[in-house]
Image 1 (cartoon, rainbow, N blue to C red):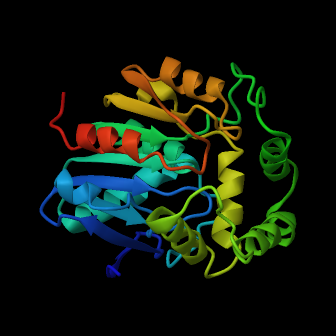
Image 2: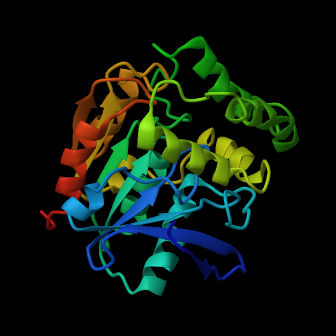
Length: 278
């Protein structure tokens, strides 16, 4: 297992991060989903094949990072800048998976002089968007996942949604959709994310149900938006909304649902991210 490193924010918070791939490779910041941790990464030797230095960090309250109640999606830019500065990295690509997608876009929007390229994988649209039918085509279970954070406070979410999350992760096989290294990586990342209790997960749910704090037209880096063709949690119109709003964006469709093996599409995306600025 890789080492965990830390950076201290100006407000005293600790941010934990880990590095994967090639230490002198092309820098790529990874943003995990909800739940998740610094152990989220692409499996196999994908980073080695494309000479990528991937840096994944624990969003506040997850894993070993200090909680930051009330944080917004846009605040991810501050934390990524702190880690990049500590590592002496001036320019980098960003990639966000699932709920990490909005955070990757936030970093690209607020650090335009540093972000070379941007990818989102299976990213939701903005819950607060007025020009989107957010729930159209979404499964009933997923509709509830989004409605509850908007309707309840942190204490209620910790008592109910977090309890359900723990029960799911304690099941005999919570991820029957995947197997092998991908299965083991996801379980490791999810379980590490909640090691210190509900705070990170609850704060994340609340931030995702609130305005992101930036607009899509602020994202100037070339961007690819990957979506699953059978994803019942992130319907097609979410991807179309993102692509329509980002000035230089392209949709990439991958067979499968939200939790699935998307390695073929990811191979192409990592190769593209490792390229030079266009």
